[in-house]
Image (tube, rainbow, N blue to C red; front, side):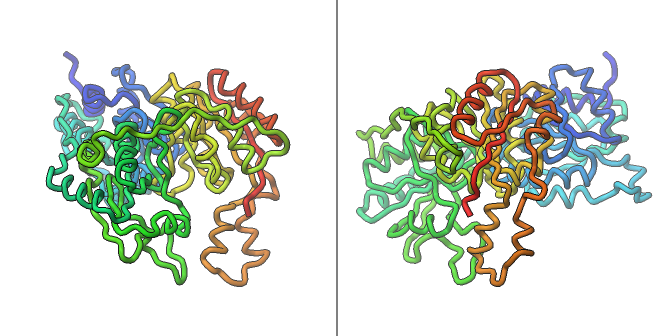
Length: 520
């Protein structure tokens, strides 16, 4: 058998461990990994033109596939460029295996221009981190990285691969390593929570993580129906299943004022795979903690626990004879006239295809979207878990790679789109079934809102200039076409409906530039 180099042993071990896709933006240090792809055809390489697209695509892939993809990034600056969407992935508990090329071990002493402290950058992700030292160990290192990424509830594993370790001969493949699954929740803990939920006081049940899929939603609905508990989904779930035939559980509001109203009066807040809620930002004179002052917070299951089983066990104790309440099928009527914040979501709700995956970065333009799509055919929603914008297009790209048989809908605010718009090129190259609707209000509308909410005084024309996206207007149709993606523009509900229906029906990527008013 031909002797393997380090890169070849790495890729073969990744494939043997179930990693089938590598989203990549390589450089010189990674060329042996790139060359090794031809020797291992089971690994699909997908090129992103910017590292933030690469990392966001790996996040979207993991959320839908339920297993990791690899990323291939170039030294510390490449990792730094991808950090924003790795932050979102960390908050989503997405399993990802980063392969970061580094200078050859003997070259690092010379402080070449791209030399940096990769470990320090990767350490901010609070995941698993390892530097390969010997070519013979690269396969075993890779197997451990894949397992670490899948340790419950999922995390980012980063493998630093020096160039000489990659090109060196004597590589060996390794057997897959079993990851650590979710921890069972003790029966005593479930019984304690059951006593609280059935105790007659007002209870809010806040779910997150794996609980936001069908089994967890059904158990949550049963508990709420039997006990009167107020069920809520965390504000930004990694993946929320919703639509006709599933329980409709309201999400906790982004605005602190709304979340406070939703939790008002609760004597107990039960956490099931979610964190205790806090305000997204600090605001002068307002509390950071959103739990009512006299309420007690109890943990049924944290994010590393088997939260779905815990909810089902709780439901058996307090709701044994209660069925979940399921959302009836219902769609809005198709609207007419100029696009508004109400009419565009009604178009989506009326025409959303079966089994759609929505990558939702509509931000302020999408506040009315949940109500308009509640009774649409069953679908998944992927949300902005870490608040780092520029996630929508890359996450949609990765989701489409993970599920080529499902329509992916990217609902995308205009300002956030510009962060990672080169994802369109990857969608075109891979012929991915992604329909992007850009909500173009020519403003950082969310920052206009935040400017008021933080109580900043004296803002005028100069401040407003930093929140305005006109002069020149961004032409998303021309940008998309330049990336190889067919594009159209909609100014009325009728135009959006016709263009959206056609885009979803045709294979490959499409973009619709929807001109909508700013909410502020």
